[in-house]
Length: 474
Image (cartoon, rainbow, N blue to C red; front, top):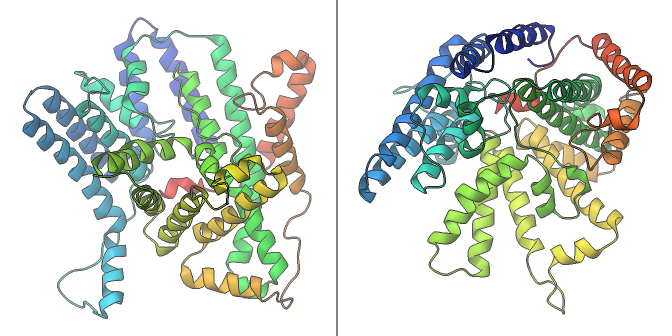
């Protein structure tokens, strides 16, 4: 885990060895990165390392095969081999149990013989790296990306350890050329990487993990808390997941910078969005972009007539799949459908002047549009965090009944100061990639180091017990 001392030691060793090899020996650097990435992944569960390698090799061969023939039928065949393999792996490991159990519940069939459920863990980062490799073969087929002839570089692209298990989801045409080109050591880039890692660790360890303790306490016993406390816990979870996932992304991007790589930005102050449409352009940006490019746009292209109903169905389909991508549970499917419906409603002409709700919200006072987005996101957070629809129903019943029985607690104390600090810092530095990025230009050296050491001491103080990142489960 990125928030462990073990990872810190691992990172220092790999970093020193990587630059000791020298910038003129790019292949040797790539070999080191690949071995480090497979070690990083294999230390979780070495058995699933073979699946990662096999997926990489299959998509590498598919890309070469597509580019090696001019026959459209053969190109389609190789493309569908890649797609069926990736989706098949996802279905087998992530969705098989869900669909079989749902089938049994729907038809009232209890299977006692004939098959047994898979009782194995979902491979770490499966949804991320399958989408990354699948987008490669699709782009090669569409001639948006040139196929690589170097297996080593492709394996590095798929398995690059900073973003392997939870993104950002990178396209081959952005990340793969960085393995093909020479990387030069730059001290300023290293400093920027370390600052971004520091900021990500602070968000994860000091804020997300502390908020998580309070949120877990409520979700483990919702019957024991009143309406106000339940709503407060949901609001805390909204900030917990933001600090957790954006904190991971900061660490991933910062770590990549240490080795001379640039990853895509994945968050842009999502809670400042005025519409749900804008929210998804600011939250998990690379996932939204993936589904837009490979689901929504192709669906619209194959539609015989593009009508409002076609667009509506395309949005609903796309975001239902976004929800399902997050996990094999009805809560995630309904989460996706909820956001899809919100996007559809925002695009409908609801007013006499034919203005859409989206345009109205964009011109409305920020407090109103922001409140609208946050209410929908709080409901989405409940669906995201709940174990099942029964728990969702229980939460909603207790909240809307305005019950005052049960404990009334603020759940968390002075730690909220750190959350307020993070929000103020990110708002103030909204034009930067992260708040510590241009501190050299704003503060003299003694003041900067006071900031750095304060953050480091707080991180070390609260480094245990460490919790896994929420998006590692996907």
